[in-house]
Image 1 (cartoon, rainbow, N blue to C red):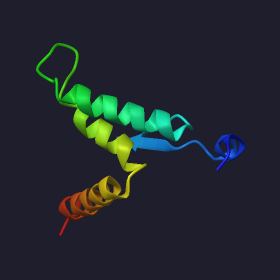
Image 2 (image 1 turned 90 degrees about the vertical axis):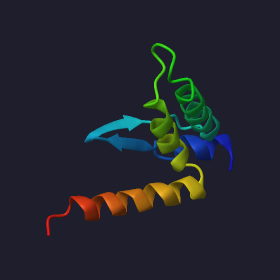
Image 3 (image 1 turned 180 degrees about the vertical axis):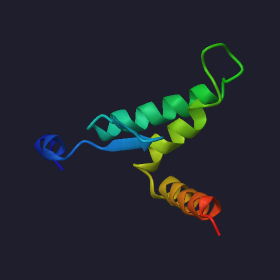
Length: 86
């Protein structure tokens, strides 16, 4: 894959609570952002940083790695079944 192919690819978007956020086109930047959010979340006891960063970092990483994506999809199915009225 060349840099020109990367520019022509559509930008990935994350949907959180009905809002869409555009992620960087570069795979390296997306991985770096996901790792920084996850590692920053481990320091959640410090001011400004919080444990909320861990799931957000994993969400960003789930668009890059199949193992994390599988867990995200299982969670979405589980949550949909839980929220479904019987």
